[in-house]
Each structure stands twice: as structure tokens, then as C-alpha cells.
Length: 263
Image (cartoon, rainbow, N blue to C red; front, side, top):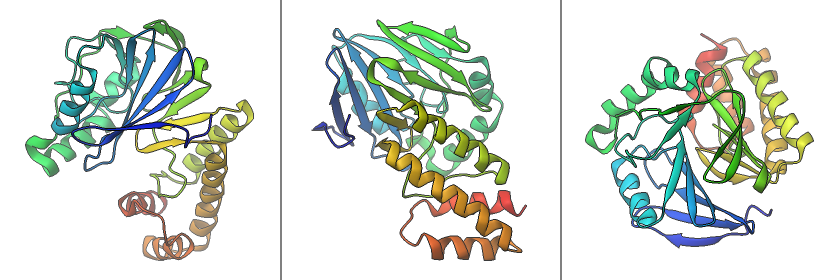
């Protein structure tokens, strides 16, 4: 699947990119919210499954309007547990560690930060999970998903469209990298994606990407480790990374990465 082969529909906020796989369609919603989140809908036989939730009230309203009159079989809530006002009656699926991440862990800390930063525009309510899932296959709305728990929550394979969902990629933007060990883990994960030959890589902070983008990210992570090994402090590290990747966005993530490499 070519990542640029989609139909575009403008919503009241953001836009929808629709990829046609035949029996299954992927609706990739660019929320246009302050965090530039992405929400994915899988459609099969007229029924929808939602992957992640919009967390801002305006994008939730836009997506609810888009789904009006369309049956939703369930929602997979992985890394973005906020936004509980969105589709409150729909069954919610998550791993136990993803629930803990949103209620007590790093996800909860982020939700609290965003609620402080954005006020009422951010829906800090946390989705109530009705179906706890573990490693392996689960079928929702006639679509098979393969769940892979991670340190924080879970990733999702979608075999029918030869795609995989993970929290972050972004081939031309900085990511949160929690030190050299974390970088090595991300590199191994991306190499696994390349080996398995996924057509699309879906993330909740970027448009769908492909295996060329995965290799670009591997190169970035390798360079990040090399730069860190040659620097003495976070300021020098950040300056060197900015010089190497001057066009990259998400400077706030680079700040966080610098803090991890040089605590």
C-alpha cells in the first residue's frame, strides 16, 4: 500500500484520509489538535473499530459527527487513555498494563500535564476499559487484531491490511528516546517491522508511514546514540542534534530526550 494513496475528506476539525484495502478500509484521522494526534478507524462490512481516542473536545466532536449513524463495534485504547467523553457506550479494549499506564503511570502524568496546559479544551477523563486483553489475537467487528504488550501499553498488528500500530515513529521529527538502551530497543523493533514487510506503520502522532521511513528512523536513532557518546552535557547534545537534523520538528521531544541521556 502506497502511503500517499488515499481519499481526503475535510471534517469540521482536521481531515480524514481513507485507504481502501478492499474488504477493509482504513480511515486515518488527522485531528488538527494542539498535539497533532492521529486516530484510526478500521471499517469492515459497514462496522467500525476505533484505534486510540481523540483527547481534545473539538476533535472528539468532529470525529463523532463523522461516525454518526455508523455502528462502532469497539475501541482499542492503548497509549491515549484520555478523552472519555468520546463514544462512552462503545466497548473499550486494552491490556492491564495500558490501563495502569493511564490511571497511575506515565500516561496519567501526561494527562495531568495536558489538562493544566490546555484547560477545558482537553478531555482529561480516562476511558473505562470493559474488555481486558493480553498477548495474542482478538477479533472486534469481524477484524482480527494481534496485541503485543509493551513496557507502557500495547502495539497492534492488523493482518488484513498488513499494517502495524505503535505509539511513535515520525521519520522527520524528533521522538522521546529514554537513553541508549531505549534507542536500541526502538531500532530492534523497527528492524523487525522491515523484516516482516508491513505495508503501513501507524502511529498516534504522525500520518501513516512505510518501511523507508522506518529505515530513516533507524539511521536517526543510531546517529543520536553516537552524538550522545561524544557529548558531555545536555546542552551540547541538543545543539549537535539540531545541527545534524535542522529541519526536524518536535523540539519539545528533543528536550525530553536530552534529559534522559544527560539526567
